[in-house]
Image (tube, rainbow, N blue to C red; front, side, top):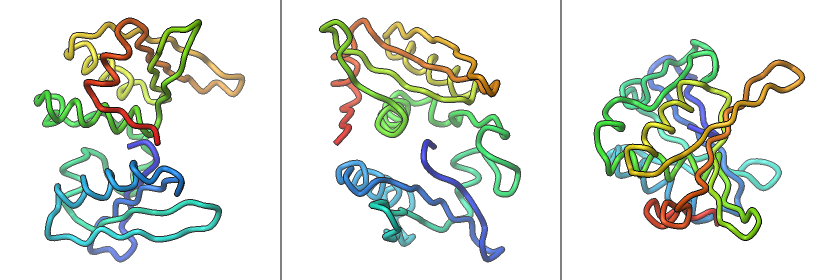
Length: 175
């Protein structure tokens, strides 16, 4: 969800495109393998782009079903995307989803010697889903809401207590 989009360039099949910095080789490998597991008969392409990034893409008309958002209806923010019900209903899928979200739009850091994990989004529905999925795993996240000068609202979800356990449970790898 973090660095991707859906579009339908040929009017026949929807393309999911995820852009990633080339330095994140493990994340690229995981994204490609995940898409291939989800759609084993479809080709998953890697396209080199300028400035040290690549696109991972796959065509399928199943994307609108899997992701619950539409092509041509505005940005993920405008569509108020959320985590699909089928993901939230399954603990293993929720863990995999959280892993992906934290690896793409999250951070792991030390604050006064304590490990922390945080995830940032401007989409309130996504922020609420992430909070619920983390809570359902037995952790106690907190959320801070910041309003920027341009009026955009940023939701920062932080796990400070048992963050190391959370990181290990999800097998978050930022490399």
